[in-house]
Image (tube, rainbow, N blue to C red):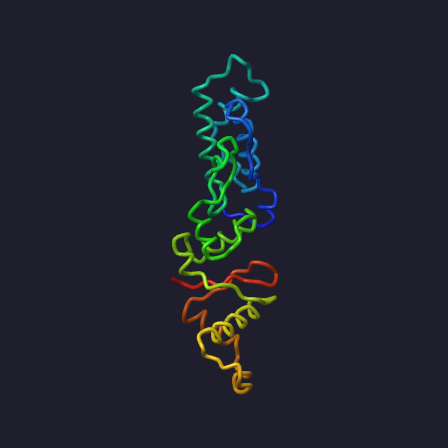
Length: 219
């Protein structure tokens, strides 16, 4: 699995090939994608020399019909599949679509999809989902632990604002604040309350949009 920036994911080749299972069609498409991702991920040696030599012989510009070999082509396709899997974004895999066996690309892993949907997190956009999963990974959150770690969302144009918003929301939810009283609850430093949640209970914020954040905690 590889971590990408937002800029890199904006030009990521999510769909590699459609409407064919012919090796002579798949090989050049896989090859082109591997070369694009090698540059994107700054991994110039992504395709090993042996596989590259076989590609040149099978489907290169100077290849001849007599150079084609079905067994070699199948092995090279398998090698390229492993190569593309190696540069899949966090939480994604390379292979055929579940709904179309002739559509090859990068897809969200089923365990992550189930976990995100259970938490009510939209996962239809692969770019934003890949960025989010990379941040979950930074907090050691896996698909299996997400539902226990996820605490909802908070609003704010900065981490401090969002943290204070969540601390106040949490206090209200657990009955630690009585909104009918104007004082002294109006004097609570909600940012300090959030910082205590961070330090004492392992809470953290992950930005979703410029004004919204996901809240997670250590489990």
